[in-house]
Length: 201
Image 1: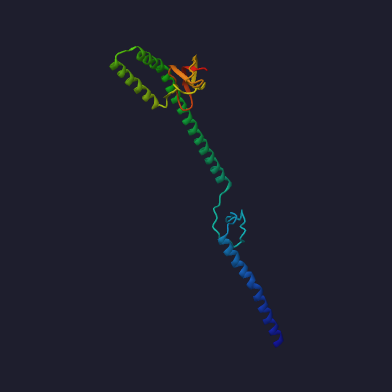
Image 2 (image 1 turned 180 degrees about the vertical axis):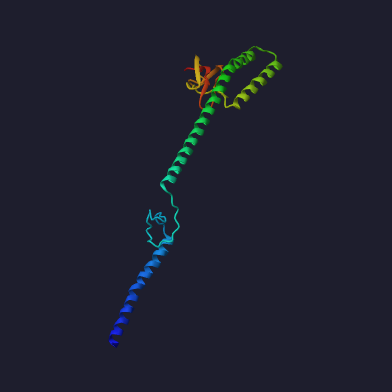
């Protein structure tokens, strides 16, 4: 009988040794679960966690309906951003069109100033006329409209319209010798080309 008792005790010790690794594995799984990212799961076990059945991780469960609403909200936000961008572009284009239309009507007045300066001989009258002319040019520049500088510049077909030529050997070929009509432009568009006389050697 004593021998049987000893064998039973030995078996019990072996069982204890076998159980210890399982407990350790369980503990390791829990520790792993708390330190690593698991797949989403809930109480209904719709999604299984890689950590094991006894996982204590906290997961943010998002069902298909919620995901649908999230995607819808993202699409609406993207559409709204596109709408704002299109409206901003339309507003800018409308403003520019209005400015261009106004400047086109004003240009003949600017031409009259140039003609008047060539005919008026009174110095005081010329100074007053020049002052008004410069104030108008300054006002136009505040709207992004600039006078095209051409005298002494190399002829540029994108900015100048050459209607006359002359030959001056003291100057370079195709240099603008005289401005016959002022031209105006924006940073990216020519409203009216400068009408010029250029040098041809």
